[in-house]
Length: 137
Image (cartoon, rainbow, N blue to C red; front, side, top):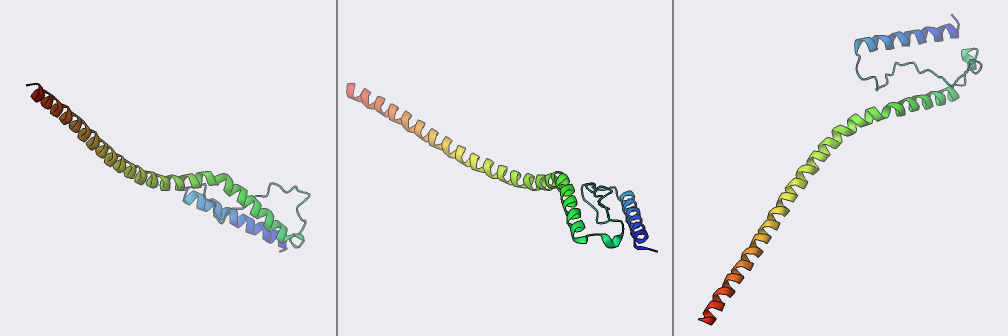
């Protein structure tokens, strides 16, 4: 068995394993599986090496890494949005509760101050009226 046949056999096994996992657990497709076969759409047929020994593994690894990163970045919004939403909901809830408590305290103090000032003004007015009546009488 030559290296190309071996490579084809391994690719078929990986695809079969990936398909079996997908059927077994149809969970979140946004999370890439380690068994996924990464297609390299940027390679033209003329660019592909004729034999496994001709593969520039460092260059291939870099290209695969770039493709995987691009795919993850494309899916990252969904992944990050879910995680971020859960985290932000907790933070916003705590901040809202804290803000509401602070607003209640500030409003209560403001009402107390306004009532005290209104009572003081009314008492002063009544006092001045009484003193004015005494002065005239």
